Length: 170
Image 1 (cartoon, rainbow, N blue to C red):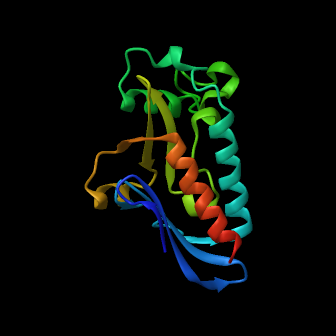
Image 2 (cartoon, rainbow, N blue to C red):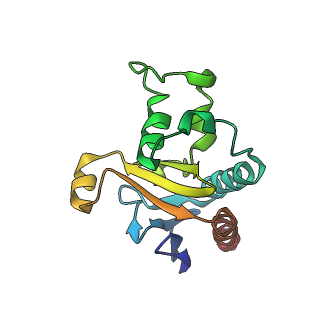
Image 3 (cartoon, rainbow, N blue to C red):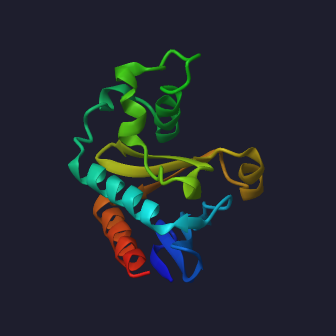
């Protein structure tokens, strides 16, 4: 069952349980299935993670750290955020390590461990940005290392809430 729009953001949820409370759940961003390493999701944990992201999306002051993004492209912003977690960089631990978790998205356990993803505000729009953390998949995808696609946050929240509702029925 597809929930959302695969050209932007969607879930592909298999109806058959493959274990106790375990379902095959794929996430699709920009027509690309991103859960290639592990798409077997423990449903209660996945739902809790999804609900957490929805709450954070709705409650954030998205302008909080944008002063760091001035005159940067989406890719440069992604790289900046990512570097706030790398000790050898100048950006490490800026704002007491609050920037990375603030923009982090899809940190939903083993199903999304192969992916680094942020929601980035840029010029009155929002972009879903992601990068595969494994070089083999990156090369196989034939795409640039850091991908980004514009998203409407209301649509994103609606898609996640619809997926939560479906998963709760399983």
